Image (tube, rainbow, N blue to C red; front, side, top):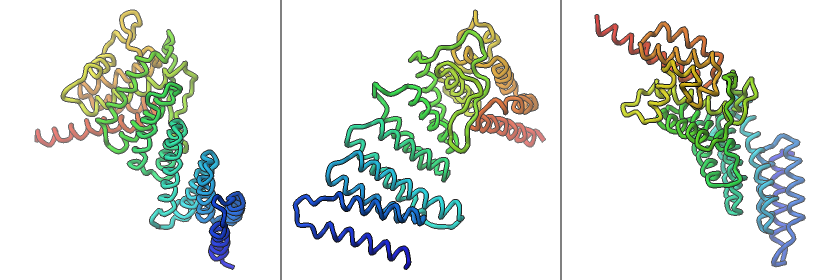
Length: 349
């Protein structure tokens, strides 16, 4: 018999049992067990979307008896099954559809987020927002849709005493990277500036005396997580990453009205005093690998002197030390100078 017919009959049978009860508060445990069993059978048959529908009924049953923890668990399981169905139908099978299961995934996540917000559990709500945003980015490249959930996760974590500041900064870095990839460069610059100021003002790093802290920062494409080849103290590597991105955005945007911290940043990377810890104390540079700093300083000076050849050479040397976002901006800067130089040559003819 067709699985959809079996599913409909079984689903209707369970629903009818609930409707036929004459008690004011019918015992829903039987319905929960039957929906759960049916869900597992459908999942075993790889009917993930139908399995998710059963799990939604399980969540509703738990909601009717006020069991928020089990309701949340059922909703999250339903969301994961909808997601699995979407992956199979669109990514693995390359079928064109209207992303119905992805829409259902988002809807169920939203329901779980609201549930935890109602329970005043901001941490779990933020975790679910972050989880959904990561899925939208990593699996479907839905950058614009993911922006709202990263922003929502940050808002939920604001003014929460038990929140680890490093955790909030990691979310901000993900949000800033998305702003870069969605061409909101001004928004990204403001956020990177906020990140560097936050790390410095909260004193949540312990910079070393030498400059061997930052050796390399890469991005794992499959999980969108930051991976370092060294083990830095505290959040020094995050400060370095954010400050480099802030500098690159300043070089690319060339703001007409430079904020004081933008000016300080630009001067820090073009000052020869920066190599002397006795005469200079710009915190991100004190946490940075000396070789990376020298390459970056040379790149800034090449930009200021419009030396395109030197910029391209330095870009090649900086490339292995940078993550995806940094290399993207580095390439944008060199392209901008190349196009400007090409235009000037045409006008001079």
